[in-house]
Amino acid sequence: MLKALYVDDDEDIGTIVELCLELDGTFETRTVTSGREALAEAETWNPDVILLDYMMPEMDGPTTFGHLKESGTTQAIPVIFVTAKSMDEDIAMIRDLGASGMISKPFEPTTFAAEVKSLLGQS
Image (cartoon, rainbow, N blue to C red):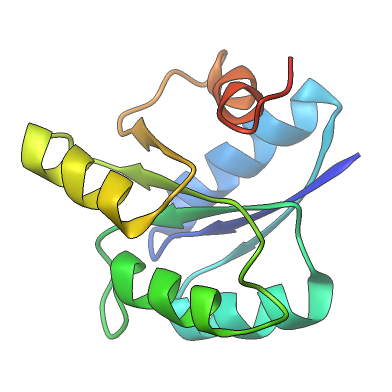
């Protein structure tokens, strides 16, 4: 079972992601709605992957990512951005940050779990 932490200020999308992952049968999923919550949850729950929205109020995805990579507890956790920002320069910036990948919004619910596993190098 893979533990996935989904971070998005849109609770409806969080619910959809949770359903997509849990229906796959491979994931245990928790969702939070802010970067600050993500940092706290990642420290205590130690997920196998963090799925991170790019645009959020207060602390955006890249800032949250930076804090995750600064902590000895969370720095090795793979982070996949889930974002509507899919211009070439956005993709390049996410790659330059060192993220494990990116899934574009809107995503296809029936293949979402497979995309996450593929980006983690699992089948």
